[in-house]
Image 1 (cartoon, rainbow, N blue to C red):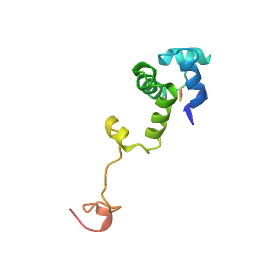
Image 2: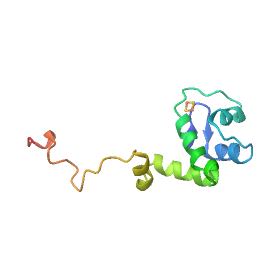
Image 3: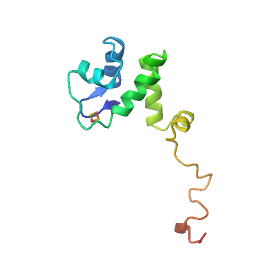
Image 4: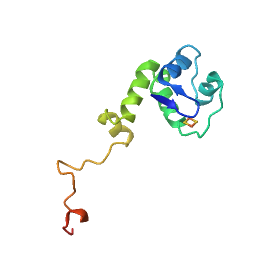
Length: 105
Ligand code: FES
């Protein structure tokens, strides 16, 4: 999975940049990668990985794996912590007050 689509920084490349080249900021990641960022959408993800991993004592690989699980919506507990969790709609696919099911609230 790519962490940065614009410059093709994948998981293994990012782990290598963090572990082998010692990058600890988003700017250092791009500098070590030898490219300038494109759209910048990945900056918060890279920052999260750096803060969750090397800066807090975890390995880059562990941090990237946790980031990937959050991105894919697998780790609900982690999403709840960051506020990215999808709303819990209960067991019904439609909320009872949804106008699409024909009843008005
Ligand atoms: S996704 Fe990284 S700069 Fe666009």
